[in-house]
Length: 143
Ligand SMILES: CC(C)(COP(=O)(O)OP(=O)(O)OC[C@H]1O[C@@H](n2cnc3c(N)ncnc32)[C@H](O)[C@@H]1OP(=O)(O)O)[C@@H](O)C(=O)NCCC(=O)NCCS
Image (tube, rainbow, N blue to C red; front, side, top):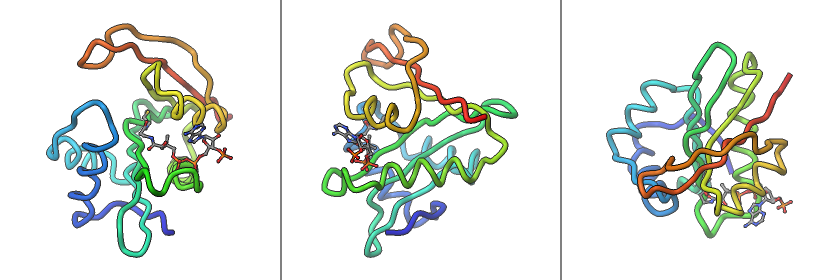
């Protein structure tokens, strides 16, 4: 398994993973724009030539990084791919002191995943998602 920066030819696969595994619906154009906006924060996990996971992080201030999307193909979960994507993302931004994200309050696997990586729930936001669901804000202070 290899973690690398996304390439244009990966975009369709990334879009399909996002459509399949993320509850919020994102357009192909949005994903393309995020690549343009944050080329160092958009990584894919590739196995035998296939994209099996991706992460998108964007800088929101000089020292903060917001994780916007993370998904791993169901058949490849629980093998450390999500963790490898998160770690590589962090390495790409050595100046970042705070990483944060929002997740649905009922997304137990994501909450456990992020807690395992040292994130904690710091707030919740009502009506965060387009279907009205609530989000937890989770953050990790790096240094
Ligand atoms: C969250 C997600 C990216 C994790 O990816 P992954 O490759 O399976 O994660 P890893 O194998 O690196 O897991 C690391 C740790 O996370 C926790 N974890 C991951 N999946 C879990 C699950 N289903 N239940 C409980 N804990 C889980 C465990 O602590 C695990 O460590 P362990 O294997 O030593 O028990 C993946 O489940 C996913 O794509 N979910 C759907 C999309 C999503 O919800 N994204 C997050 C939106 S904010």
